[in-house]
Image 1 (cartoon, rainbow, N blue to C red):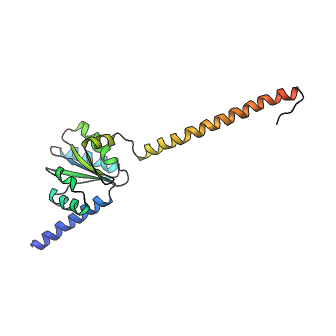
Image 2: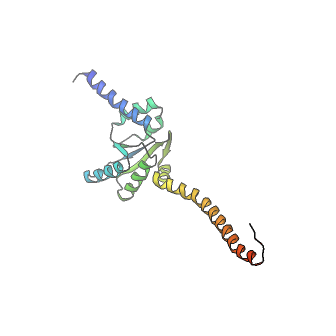
Image 3: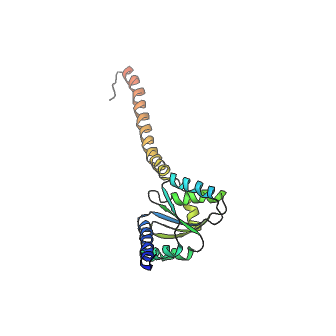
Length: 178
């Protein structure tokens, strides 16, 4: 294979990683050394179920892509066998799935990530992993919005019931209260 062909193939990979870094809402770098094929397959399934893309690239090519995107802070974590988890729809999904998997599989080591364009360390990723998924957050938001409306409805209902209870007493006295 000619040197130009090899360089062209590497550039295609760099462009792919650059595109993924630019379009992902979050990226998590994890070292997978020591995972069995069955464990890696289990992890990929769990990530795919959450809409997370899990890819393995050469660190050197990822470093070139981070230079192109301005995410050079990630470079210090790109040593050893790493995989990148790209979250597209739910920014918390890669952190949540990887942290859950790492609890039972000590060979998976979460190193760092980029969430909404900011470099985050392991501690921040662990904190993010505790957040609910998008549907869970929507239900929490709806519960927050529903409670005040329900209270207002109960107060209005109580006032209406109180008026209904007072109306028959007023009718007995010969006064009609409207």
